Amino acid sequence: MITVAEALDHLFALVAPLPTERVALAQASGRILSETVCAGRDQPPFAASAMDGYAVRSADVTTGVRLQVVGEAAAGHAFIGKINAGQTVRIFTGAPLPEGADRVIIQEDVSRAGDTITLKDDLDTKTHIRPAGADFRNGDAIKPPHLLTPADIALLAAMNIAEVPVTRQPTIAIIPTGDELVQPGEQPGPDQIIASNSFGLAAMVANVGALPRLLPIARDTVPSLELAFDLAKDADLIVTIGGASVGDHDLVGQVAQAQGMERSFYKIAMRPGKPLMAGRLGNAVMVGLPGNPVSAMVCGHIFLAPVIRKMLGLGEAAAPRETFPLAEAIGSNGPREHYMRANIGNEGVKVFERQDSSLLSVLSRANCLAIRPINDGPRKVGELIDVIRI
Image 1 (cartoon, rainbow, N blue to C red):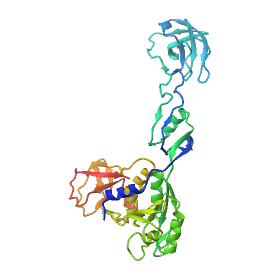
Image 2: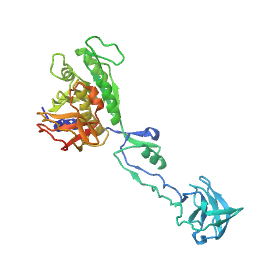
Image 3: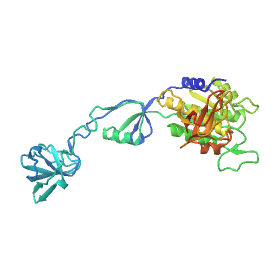
Image 4: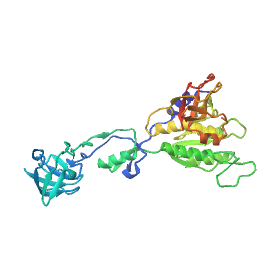
């Protein structure tokens, strides 16, 4: 058996960032920027009013002064002309500042009669002007890799960028295996269960930014598994669930190797998730996950998500860890690194008592995995423990 860190290194060695594609701005949210993009203009492209009021010359501003209103400027409709001494222009938020003006007096500080305004007492000292290029300048860059948020999409639009270079999303073919499985909504036989891992993993990889492809259940026969691999052959990553151990009915590894899989490793010193297999199969990477529901989901967090992030161009990094105090004491750990279902609360980390790898209800209540190193001794309340949020 190899360690979790060694297994992750092997997996990183099997994948590379995927190529760039260009997508419309409206489809770019949540994608990974793969090339530098630069603003095509200043923002704002002109000095603009930040308030509704009157554009004036600072030299004319004194308490009680009267100024003649010679025009109006609104957003999208500039005043054509120049403000001279003793003149002002009615201006609205976002409108270009007229030539000659260098200050905006807010409308609350003015009284108006016809085409004349009078400045009131106690004027504030702010100019209420947004300078040209105050937000960004022509040529300012957003650099990769970068996960594009809704705020980034607004920024790109303001930069006049209509198409965005992003990393192609990896296609993840997910193959549940086993005669005991039926799909949700079907009626299971007396010795069957509902396929759950595949749906949880599909949701997980979609959250990371990949495109899941749920394939039909592969039965515990060579022809059924061969058909499943054939359906998955154009994927970037093939994930099988179950059948990767060494039992008489565990045929996944046998069929994969018969189809040319170059195995990188098999078995990891971790709980849950010991019987995990990985390698290359044609142009795809293959990962064989254990069949127990919690084992498959935990391995998804620990291995699949970091591998997908590398394929998206986000570099090589294990799932991020944080450190919190224990809310309750826990016993010793054994010879495998243990990823225990737990909750982070106000008092710290509480590790659930039941850690059986078949208990999805426990996993559903967890918000983190508490990490126990190999042969870790008993821990007291208040001792620090590493966790991975899930």
